[in-house]
Image (cartoon, rainbow, N blue to C red; front, side, top):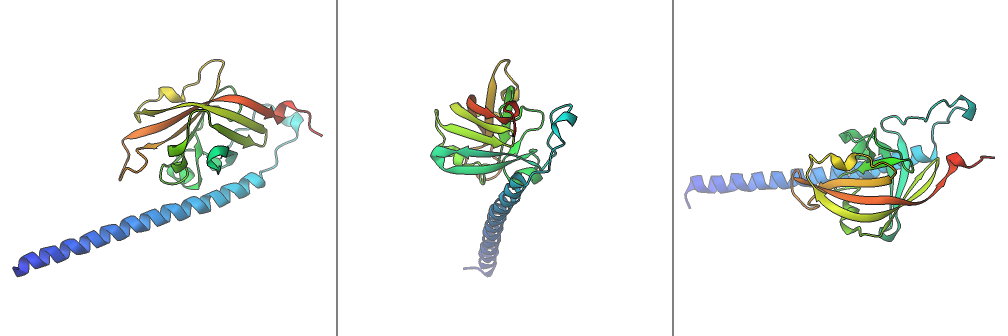
Length: 205
């Protein structure tokens, strides 16, 4: 075999090894960051910033970016995740992100939560119509029931718009789940509020 060809093959081998090591490092980093982020989010949920006394509340408290706003549970899939406010990369490294400007859990309108397909929302590949999704906040516990799933374009913004008279939940992640690189589509889970225990409407002791 000519010396030049051997050098090319050797160089190609080193490049493949380097690429494999980089992908392994990136995957390990994402996994570790997602776990650590959930620990931080769980701590914030368990130790919320005290609210002002009720008489001084003139309007609903708006969560700050990075705040933990809910605990999301999918009982059939044995899943428990902590949802943070915001959908920027820094927020999504911590956990699923509630999209600012959409309804808060249990409220009228459309509650939209997004997360990465290769970490927190990988579980959505197994979700089914009829599954329960529970969102627990400091104001109550809200049970949503999955009505269906869809594959949509990333430019489809209609799914985040509220529908009058409905309390909806949409979970969004990239699709396909095992696509290498930037996935070209989005996986959408649609759910409707089925039951709730709203502590804001319950007298507190």
